[in-house]
Image (cartoon, rainbow, N blue to C red):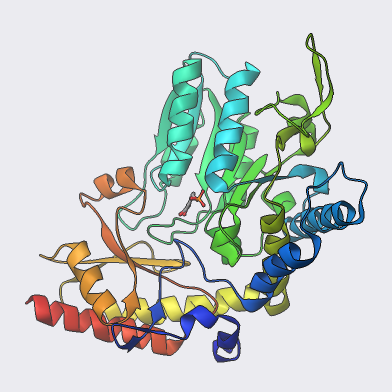
Length: 405
Ligand code: PLP
């Protein structure tokens, strides 16, 4: 079990009062707080080596390029990617998924009569880009339904693969309910049916070790800010031979080999998909965040968070009128509602007691519609949360229920 108390001093932001109460930060699925080594990596970049990368001959440009490319290596190692060429820096999960949907639409690989498969659990970021691809190509969006306990209907999934599915776009962990999908197993089935597979690892990245080769998908997307790194940096991992074949996306500097007014030739991977000046500091800080997490160990982090989420579910489930969503073995997020009360009112009362949770549809309106609700209260956990945080959440929720009557 992780001793989060020993790590709390790395997260200065957590040492503050909100409405006179100790801050209890349980909105980690929206964004995580950043530890000191990550803040120092960003600061060091701007204080010591800030420069544009790749084409400079001067010392700062070389130092910034080296730090940026080392960051790519750190990400590749973290993901168990075959090489750094498979790691494309983007601004986040949303940008990574839009990139894949955009290049697939351009590629001519998907057309009328083809199908794109997503699940009921998806975040809007893993729905809307595929709807746009369908509009552009004439393909049809199909949806894997879920059971009442928030897990996907695997039988329905297998029957849907009988059609003309060209790509399965699937979240690994649901940001709304914490459901952990069996991504390796589902990837195997989809690949056997001839589909490409994209895994949305926006949530999973901070809770589970990621091995892209073991999962066997074609693409995987995540955001730095969900794993203790800054906003504005993210990753698209893609199989090199596939990315090499697919068309370029945005045009501009860095993604070219040679430009004339008549014709342009494109750069090799990963630069082909990195047009323009990237978020250099963000990539370096992301590598610092991955180093930080790996020094603790994702298995230890997962075990710690799982113990917290289980005890929170058990205690909240004991409050009359609380309804929990998602399966018992959820990861990261715990969603609940209180009969007869709006999630927003609960969230506001919790905030007044120092407990930061998120309320609303969590960018999962179709999932909320499936459960006949407009939103939930969501507590989401990170490595720095403690049993005291769980106790504060439960006490504050019980008080909110009593206050609302
Ligand atoms: N997918 C999932 C499962 C998420 O939880 C999120 C963010 O909450 C996203 C995609 C979008 O991530 P971003 O806003 O960082 O691009």
